[in-house]
Image 1 (cartoon, rainbow, N blue to C red):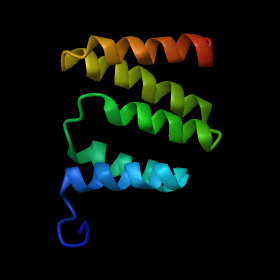
Image 2: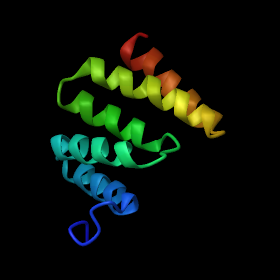
Image 3: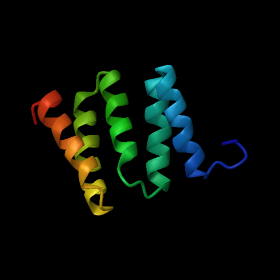
Length: 95
């Protein structure tokens, strides 16, 4: 499906979530980075991206993704998502 519509961001996000279910975190990262370059995400992708980075051992990029997710989710009116990301930073990353 993505081959037929390479700019379809809904398909990209769905594909990233499927890779996540399979534990294919490098593919999650690659797909979400492409997705975020094209989509106006409201915050959800950043949490998934942070998890993928953490599972590949890239703690700093995971932290950066969560911080960006906080900003984006607040900008889109999702304070509960922002709070979830803040709690993850505090509890899991000591930020």
